[in-house]
Length: 263
Image (cartoon, rainbow, N blue to C red; front, side, top):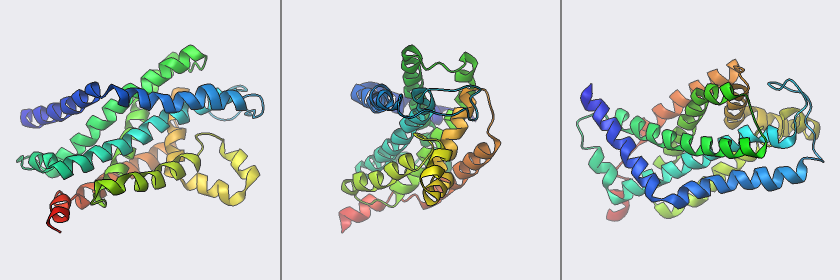
């Protein structure tokens, strides 16, 4: 067991050092949601009211509504960026070196996903702290209660990113594929608008948002922040995390880079 622990600690430490040495990564992760909160939400605050909906007990402003979605945005972008580092490691050979360890491949890949998720949580709580100062203040206990939900969502999105990166043989193709995934997931969700407003606009648009896994991730975090448990979202996110992780582990092929170079 100590061998597994040392391996996990080493992988997490490596990701932490990479994160510390890349300060622009931390700032860029905060700039996107802060622009939405400080600029986008300010413009829509007066024009777009939000009715009393779960998990809120009273009328809320638009910026209060979108903060959980923006927190999940950080997890989404970090999950995709983590898969980019996986592609890079596979290209440079460091991932193949790690896989020469006698430890099971599944453990090594899950440890990599967990390390990425833990780094993402630091960025999310930095954003929530800024939002708190700005005036969006969920219950203090909600910030703690949201930790398991945020970790689950971070693992879900990291597993999705790893699964997608398994099909990318060239680093140059990564950006296009990720943008094709990130923006539909984010905009076709309840991150920016409640589902009932989507339904008022279009029935088919509502169903696209309702079936979007990212919607359930956002709602799980939103309810947790306000000390509520969204059982359906929890079950869906847990099931998808397990499924995507299994698919990512099974489909991972460290020889992709070698095949490309040989070709």
